[in-house]
Length: 393
Image (cartoon, rainbow, N blue to C red; front, side, top):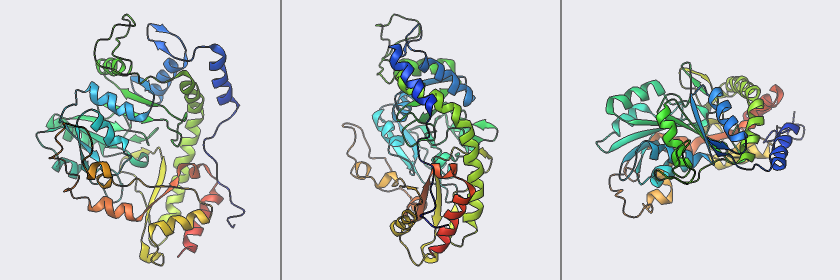
């Protein structure tokens, strides 16, 4: 099969149910959620229950995006001025910018060369008397070793936040990702496997923490109290009804998509790992389900005629294979390299210009990511990907 005969699914996947859900919100005139004791629209409150149930958590707070989800959790946990927070170096900017927004200092951690997520052994070496929390980023839906990380955090009295922007539906050692730490944060941005264009959510299993997160995300209000009583600092991070209505219909489709992604990911891994010079991201041992926001693999340039990463990606795209750009390691970004961040915060202890990032730099130089919707394709399209990569040698 040649590239003129091959087509891949498009994203997002939507149907009549999605259109009708948004239409009904427009026609209802209830375009926002209101407050817990005085609800306006129904969708935000319903989605919170449905998503908590799917993620097997007790509490869910829906918010406007995944970035403010992390910010709200940091504030609710009391992370603030000058506190250090360990973050994976291989993640989207928001995992660290949320720390900066809380007036804390992100400390970057190198990754495991096969799983591509935070190396817990290296995280342990970064702990100082200034460390207050660790943000575990489940890149590509692949879980960090959360049992080990949770034990490490407990030993040092640290908070744990799980950045699950890539990990809707991931399960590690019997537990949905997002339930191992103090709280888990999610993104529903346009490219995510569960999407409404924008949106986010926070899950946790502690009622008091849930109430505090809610207060911070709704202007410092408290559930059941007077609407214009503001008890602490908070901001308007609320999710609109349109997003929640769309997420509810998308969640109904997600379960089947999630199962198909995992099935196809295993098959494609067998095909790609059989190619000399290709190694697919290895699921962390103990992983039972993966969200697969992207599908990363590494290539050996010398096995592909000395191709650079840019040449390799261009060749895939020429063959009609959808790819996603890889995140540059955080420590290489100008804002961290130049320390042009919050005025008055002491960043002198940050490891951005003196840390050991050998693994992530090597991975970034050789990593390629297939778009997640490739995993919704049929087996013949997956075979085409493997055969096409062989033809690039």
